[in-house]
Amino acid sequence: MARGPVFLDHLTIWVSDLDRSCSLYRTALEPLGARTIDVPGPPGSWGPAVVLGPAGAEDLALVEGEPTNPLHLAFAAADAAAVDRFHAAALAARRRDNGSPGIHERYHPHYYAAYVLDPDGHNVEAVFHGPEPRMMREQAEQWVEGYLAAWRSNSPGRHRGALHI
Image (cartoon, rainbow, N blue to C red; front, side):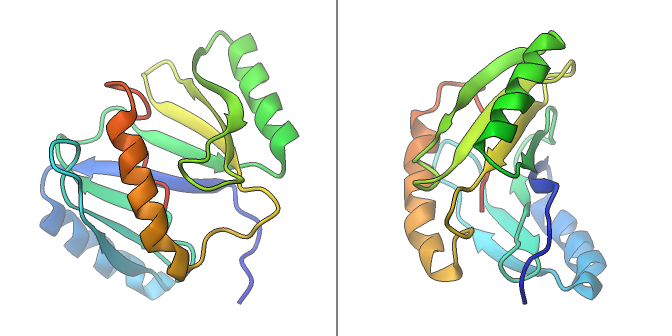
């Protein structure tokens, strides 16, 4: 089954009680075709997490920890130029830069994204995944290792809550 156009690329929500939150989201999203995948958190960074969504589109992440504030929102862009336009428009609207447009290989070789902070401090991202399709299940294990390494190297507070699965 091909995935249709996407506007919201992924969403990460920090929750104080992962089991309780998972119970709700699993139950509520199962009729929509969502499945759940457990993701271990690296020591000292973030706690256990799960990602939910239909197969190949597990775009909602729940991470155990201090409840979300702020959020990380990532919107799908049609191409790299759209990412650039997103960033320029946000800066023109006096939003704070949180990461200039460019390739972010720590996620995958074609991950082109830009980040800004909204008025409440939420990290808002536009991302274009490049000419390759989004990663398949068999790529996830390799990607998770790369992501965890990148997470550990990020400065405190930068891209908080970003879990790109």
